[in-house]
Length: 277
Ligand SMILES: *Cc1c(COP(=O)(O)O)cnc(C)c1O
Image 1 (tube, rainbow, N blue to C red):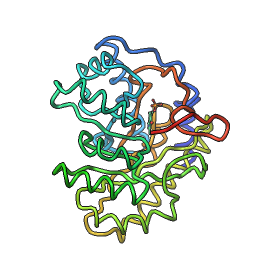
Image 2: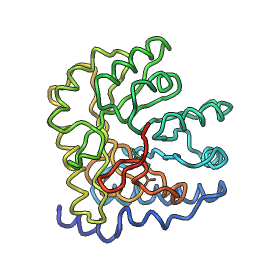
Image 3: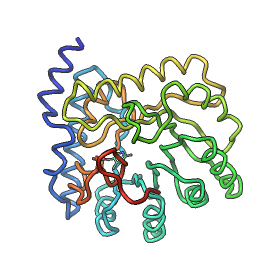
């Protein structure tokens, strides 16, 4: 069974992240509708390979780096929740698009405590929780705002020192602290897989997150939900779905290729950007 899955995924996602550069820019509502339909079809195909119901996979469109005009096209094509990985950029867009009252924002990138105030104000979801300091800062600001926030705990499943997230061994202890923060609704775990064209090296990251979830679910603290697994991006979401993803975070396959290299968003050993939110 496993061999068959790997084979089919290898055929249908030949180059994973290296394919990014080829996604054409979406510049009209029709472009967005077409791209969304294509991604949904890829989701359905991946689900079918492993006997999953596509209704169990939420598509989170990731709009980082794209301008307001393009976000409005995505909205017109039906997107009601958009993912952004830098707080300032997300806040700017939230303010500019406040007229779209049913548009919600998911912050999917690393957060510094001094930006918790902004996230507590505008975000519907935060997917990159990886420290008690951030949990504490968010909870305090959320109490002030009288809001609650869905959160995912970010786990480093690739073992790369450059990636954010808790190591798998730290997650159990971390989860036990979270019930103290009553404004945080813990929904599950999130990860970024290794950036590699080699499915055989990407898949184990997703397997690791799922197995960690299974292990921790048995004695998760009351109120800490571990139903969700947020994993998979434009280049690897089919593999993630085959391994149990319930949320896939997809940018370039919907919006088009980004001008900035991936190294701009995630520090790596050989290409380190100047700063991170
Ligand atoms: C940008 C980003 C994505 C989406 O990546 P694409 O290659 O555009 O699909 C997913 N998750 C996180 C955390 C991101 O920052």
